[in-house]
Length: 266
Length: 266
Image (tube, rainbow over all chains, first blue to last red; front, top):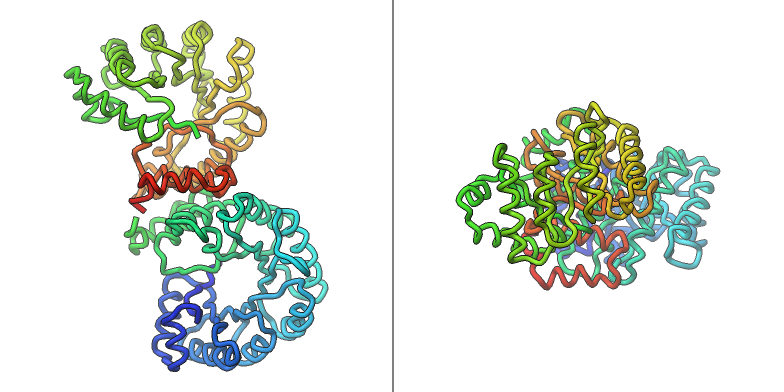
């Protein structure tokens, strides 16, 4: 499981304050905590700064990478911000995200093809959010084929099926899970990725829903998640589900996690 | 989800004492608690009494049904004990269990065919425990076809894939889950049922494993479980997973469970 640590996002008040005050220590600690908890990428998002997003995103890239030897996930809908941030990034970042929306696609494609990188590909059509499995698979197919044509290796493409709340439409659960399964089967080597928390929007006890959704998504083939790796309940879910799916020979990872206190919250 | 409440089993010390002392109040309370928590059947098992099993099982049937208006799951490997208990049972019990083992099959078949009942059918071959998906599907196919031939309606057959510990062989997880999926797809209308706790035998934090196993099993089609319905973490798993699978229109059952305090332990 590839984990993208989601905590450095200025939609969180303390992170916004740290970015505003250029509090490098606070940001580096948030990155270190996630790296130690098992993140493969550290997400950096300065979206709330709007006019100053590029400047803040660049500061985050330099600040985190000065202390942490991990690639980052550069998280912005703005091709200009991504284009500047990628110049400063050491190693191969993940770019979050491209989609079939014409303006975004055209502006971002040169950034992606001129820098070795991983890329999150959203299952949006040119005009709308997806609803069914078919909507998602259709958008994914078009986007994967376009990116491969432009030379992006399939294993660096992370398809995001776009998680929508089951409280709005209970068919969203099977639509997302079904799309993950079909995309993983239809495109061997590709990755699927998603955030978790949207699924539980509007309902009580969201963490219960989020971790059960994660269990089902992993069982359907999800290979990456944008999540908080310091959330022991979520990590416990991944570790036990992977064991139950036969992916943890001799239950070694499970036993290691137990010895490291990951299951203490259970 | 059909829940068979598992708590009235003399392998539990307090239940054994209550049966020994004919403490009807204690047994009835254990049954009531499970009925209120959502059990559709109350399992009764007096297996530890060996020579006195028939007598104890019969006492349990009469004691529970004197106070609780639910069918029971008569749980014994002994056809003689089952044969006596079924005579006392009001309504259609569940019989746990038949298998292809020759002696058991021959002795139990007349009991099953002469009384309207639900029946648990174990995926054992005539000589061995199953290991692979194929072993299980093969045994299930033979047993389902035989029972249907004898007039047992398919929807009253509950195939138990036999849950074995992942600590012994990590391939057991996918073998059990794969068998549930294939049996449910191959025999529309049939039920699948299993106990949960064997899967985690020999590992720490068993309840974590058990409830994630339950989540995956339900997603693969499991329609019944032998479990403790007063375990709020297990019930929370079922309720949230069924919602995520699109089986809870308008999230009504989820909201009801929330309002009834089922998620309090989360």
